Length: 60
Image (cartoon, rainbow, N blue to C red; front, side):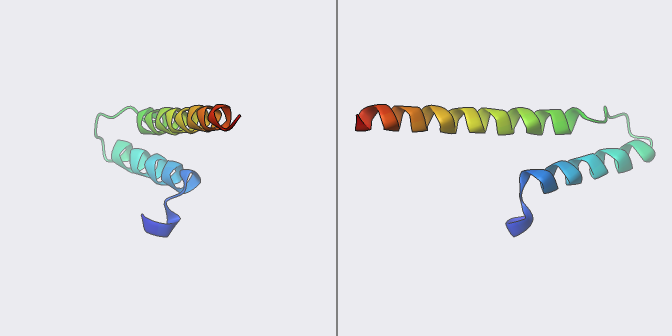
């Protein structure tokens, strides 16, 4: 996605893809991809916060 690869655009793309595939009759669970992406973003933010906390503790 390049420059436009931001969380809001990723979610929009996943939502649209899920809707289109469902409309085509494919047996998918709409929302599963968005839930997985939310989980991945949450883990990424948690990891970044832990790294920042460690860096701040080491600086003291």
